[in-house]
Image (tube, rainbow, N blue to C red; front, side, top):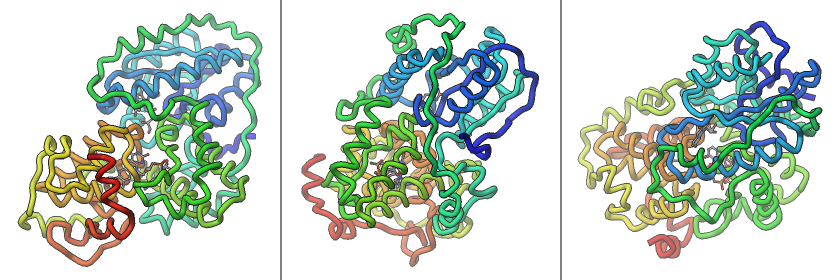
Length: 446
Ligand code: FAD
Ligand code: FO1
């Protein structure tokens, strides 16, 4: 059964007797997808066909072929899987504001269902689409275990304020998924998608090469989860902060594109009943930290700017604007890993080469950008630019929040004052040296 609290009616309207349409965007998967399950329930109840659409925009927050390649391969798998269930899949391309309403009209859709996403760009898309359709328009939170808008109706101060709200609700929301059903033959005529054509139509940066150490798609995501649980979960709490070890799950690109559900991961981790410490540490990150990011991006419209920081942080950073910077680098210097510090350069090289910097290094990496930039605003801009250009999991609420934590102390507390940082938590090389063998990390990525 679908918990009603995951569903929000964005705009009421008049149903037609046409197909039910799920506009897939954040949650790009067939199984374990509450938005798709809700759309199917509607279609079966009303005995109507079910169509899934994806609107491809070729300039999504400056994503490159690295991210688009990963995403499109995942969508290709979706087309095949959906056809196994007699569910039609349509790829639209262009501005959703025009493409979605015109598709709705063309197939005389009876209602439109979308998936939840706190990012500004998505909320604008939905606001514009809602203006030009007259059928009911729903939104289902298929990304969070506890729906973002159920957890809290305001910005949460830190993990310790949201944690009890989420943990209390887990018993209600961390439930098993119903399975997707086979539809009667869909009356909708779908033409085979010409994926070569789709990829050629993209006008995106081709320099940032796709990665080959990670296979995209829903099947590969479940294989990665299995591999993590079998081989890396036991020591997660020990190794997760050691960038020289394979200690992380490597699930973030799959979570970012919705090719796997966080709820599925949590269910399997709990079922494992494995190392207590690792379960606690992993679920803290994957449930609490991740849902805190959605909360931050939804309730703080300035999630990617200096103004979005807490007052204490803005005051403190302002007081240190004029501090002498020992080093100052441009976006280009940072991008080309041309700073004076080998450890930072290694992290930047890992990012450019692998498309996934280790979680511990992301904190260090962003804080040094603050330390070696001429202003906090410039640092924020550079960190977001590099993060979103090279990370497979970039352009995500976790990223804007992770960068705001590192540079603006969001969800953190004031620390003892120092030059440039003010009261923003400081990280340095010998802190890293205590945690792991930095020479082996530097050798790996020099
Ligand atoms: P694991 O340790 O296996 O974690 C599993 C999952 O838990 C992750 O996939 C993620 O969904 C969640 N998680 C882990 N750490 C965090 C965190 N600090 N905040 C929120 N959720 C977390 N994450 C992104 O998905 N995209 C980004 O662009 C991104 N940019 C970041 C930038 C900075 C400066 C910082 C400090 C963190 C950033 N993070 C980002 C969060 C975190 O570093 C990554 O989610 C994590 O390293 C992904 O690797 P993993 O899935 O193997 O991690
Ligand atoms: N979502 C879409 O609905 N259409 C797109 O064309 C699209 C492109 C895209 C490219 C890179 C990227 O990282 C994300 C992209 N997304 C797109 C959004 C993505 O599916 C996620 O929903 C959000 O980025 C996560 O909040």
